[in-house]
Length: 322
Image (cartoon, rainbow, N blue to C red):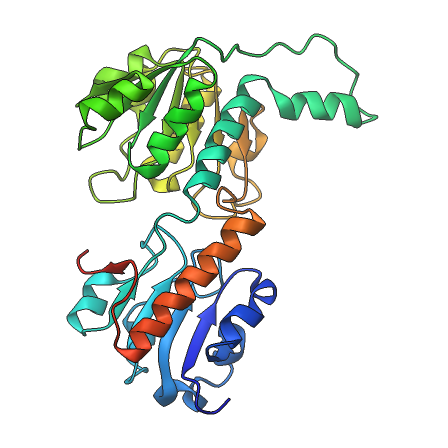
């Protein structure tokens, strides 16, 4: 046991994955580390972290105390919880897990789309809640044959479009990079180089872009006004790509029909936040990647990268720039 390298780990539901991690490392879990950090600081060689655990950000306030740290392995696609510039400046390796959960997130995007379109939450409440009248006449929005606009057409965005084809949806997409003609033709996708030009044509708008300076707040008051008033917004990206105050107003004023979002800022929302009280929105607790299969795969992949980083070997999915 003593010959295994020491890592500090902050993983949501980590009790499910203890065996995977402890097979390769001595582990101090974040909640134990913060009780006596000086006991571990000099020995820690790796950090295993995800976007959902108690360690909210890896930055100088932690790194300054870990002189022998070799790698930060994040069990996520997003890296906004890492100070990448500082990590690279200090020569600390960084890896992420870009593709293990792509199918699950794409599945969840379409689940939210269908759930909001067909008003599944209202239907479930009507059928299950004794205090709610049983309603045969809950009317939703037809999905088949409608137009979906996918904002962000990387791995997950393309997979969402593939699933949309199963509903015979017309696929439009925006991304800073255009897909090949062959990839577009395979799913009948039409490219827009400007998101504002695409929005007026969409019955559903699905957001799946990374959070970058160029995407922060990219959907705001102007964009909501460009959408159809029958449009439904789905966000399975990062919360900050949407101006949340503008979303509240768009839903209140019926500028758009409704929204289904897997992310908010902050998480969770304050008890009195207006989004909690609107009946034309579904909010889920950042669970797009949460299947047992994908979660296990993410942990396995993250651990492999951490092992390589500690040993000085080639790191799977290493990041080399911000």
